[in-house]
Length: 154
Image 1 (cartoon, rainbow, N blue to C red):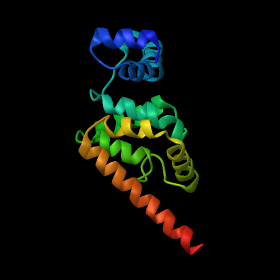
Image 2: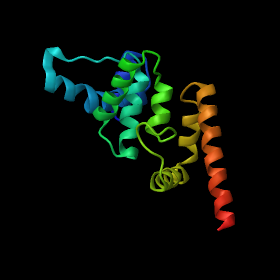
Image 3: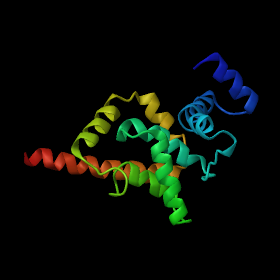
Image 4: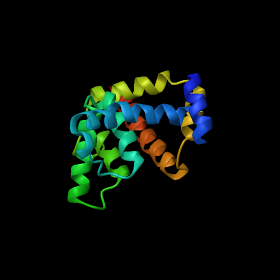
């Protein structure tokens, strides 16, 4: 972590990791919109999760973060009850709406997971809502079980 992130974290009473996450959101989503629209810039979604998902998923689904955010904004305009959780499921291919699930994406995600350090896994497990993280882990485990069964049949 950078010294600046630590200092800002102390000043704003948050972790350096949160400062870095907010900086990524600013760099990938906020600044481009401000540069393009100036004072007319609008951010339609008040929930931080939409922004985090757009930035974090962009490299995995190979779409620009701003394009993902614009999809979420359009869906929220069409359906005021559209949630960040639903957006995340769609982006990661659990629904067909944004990123269709395919073997190459699954392989990339499994390889990244296999390379994850145990400490990172522990930080993930303590980084958010326990109920949501449990559901994510359960869904991931179910997908891995399907892959294991297919491998045994092959």
